Image (cartoon, rainbow, N blue to C red; front, side):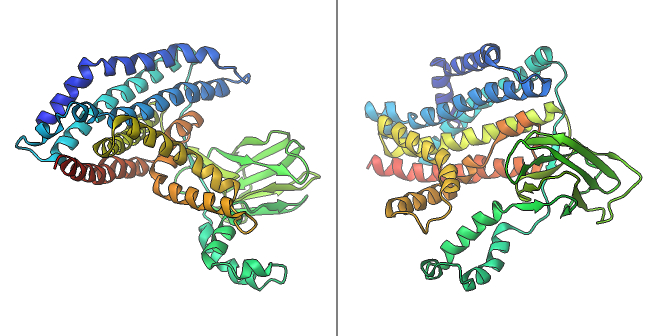
Length: 417
């Protein structure tokens, strides 16, 4: 394993791969901020800069991880030297694992160089960096549970088409789950709505909402939020997304200390999706600490993609491996949007149903890649939980790569027989 690691690392070093990637990181930090167009606020300019710069670095890292992994065995296969590498007194798994470690070390240098530059450049160029905050969602039952409870009533409803009633229960449950996630709650003038929260710690600093009215996203919004002994007032605000600061007040929330309430004091209805459009923002830690956690998540994703590239390169030639990797990566990125766009498969054509089934399968298999959003979390100031980082490291840098490299070692042995 040590020999395979050293040989692969020397190849990457002599090929100037590390310096090329570091040059791309430096270029992203010193050239891309010039294209940012501020919205007039320091927070908006900071978010756009982080999104553009770190998004470019992340895209470079992910594509390079697939490309390097996909070509790791190509040269030896083309020169018929792969059997010679495998006759040495070492296992095929050790060779694959050693090379994967060299690729992970390469991207460790790139990812953490990006973190250092991000903290240095943003502090000098954009002033004080905002601390990250913990985003707390309402403590509602899982959408699948609520959908399962509503399924019997949905099937007994006279308005439900007979074709839907005869459909498989799994398809109906999937439809109701999607509708539950998108379910709107209407708060009429003078009414109060409330949502439970499981929150431990000091009082939250603000409420983040995504409000819309019955007829327009830009109509005036008037109301009062209350949580425990804090409250916040929003008056005549026409933003679709806003944060309402919470300050201490003498009047406590009569609905309970673990409940956030909103009283509509305006003249128009307010609509929101409880599962998507409302969060409590609590104090987190520094931007530096959050950038380190985001870098670890980015490295874990790069390690997973490198292991997948090595698996492909063990079975396919370099052009075929890279083409396959590119197609699968594009499918993994588009699958969530496809499922969100067509949650109802009952009125779909056969082709749409087949595409939806493929998209759901790809999304379930690639959730480790598609659900992680270190760049978005870092840009918006959302604190990345330590347990999420540990889970990603365990899954994407240990479990899944071990399986992929074991499969690659089997393919390597079979290819040389």
